Image: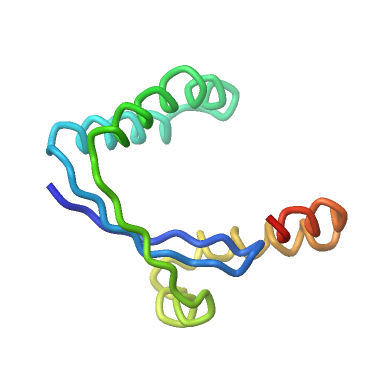
Amino acid sequence: MRRWGYYTYSLRDEACIYFEEGPWWVLLTENIVLKIHDLLPDAIGKYYDSFVWSPVAGWSYKRTTAVHIKVDYEEMKSKLYDLDKEDWDLDIWFSDYMKRKLPHWYKKITKV
């Protein structure tokens, strides 16, 4: 089974498109675990991340192959912003918050 998607990292103005391939049952298991996480309240979600999602993600990554292609952040934003406005706005808000409220940490993060 194959899947693809994209992710952005607005703190460093980076964007990637990824392609993954693996057995259908591995990708299905990963998706089910993620859907359960989305249904949990925040207080439980952080423990779920540590004790359920992290081990499942490690198990999944060992059984799949992935290709990540870096693309221009501004170009991707111009093409995909309208399709996923809520996530883009949250990502941009977080980046701006880090720049304004935590400039010391922002400088460290962007140098990595």
